[in-house]
Image (cartoon, rainbow, N blue to C red; front, side):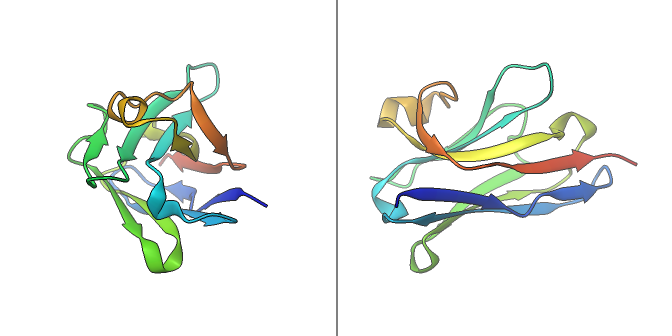
Amino acid sequence: QVQLVESGGGLVQPGGSLRLSCTASGFALNYFAITWFRQAPGKEREGVSCMSSSDGVLYYADSVKGRFTISRDNAKNTVYLQMNSLKPEDTAVYYCATALSYYHCSVLDARNTGPWGQGTQVTVSS
């Protein structure tokens, strides 16, 4: 069964850090571009970061550039999102999904993706 499971969310104070994990079962993640996106209550789904499969190029939304880092551990079949200097506006449910194409990855398309998991809640609050 093809499945993605997100984990690592939680409650953190502004300026804090979290590392999210996206672990795949049923397929090898390294063959796919992986997108992280988030959705806050009442807001549109927003693409946060993507790592292409072919050349490992990384893409970030302007809102997280310099604070978030996407990485991949093929041995663990897992993609990570390291989030530093967190802000209250980063509060959302975070999801990972396979990107449909290199183009979709490059534009951080959060509407047209492969299947995603249940998400993990990130809350940034003092």
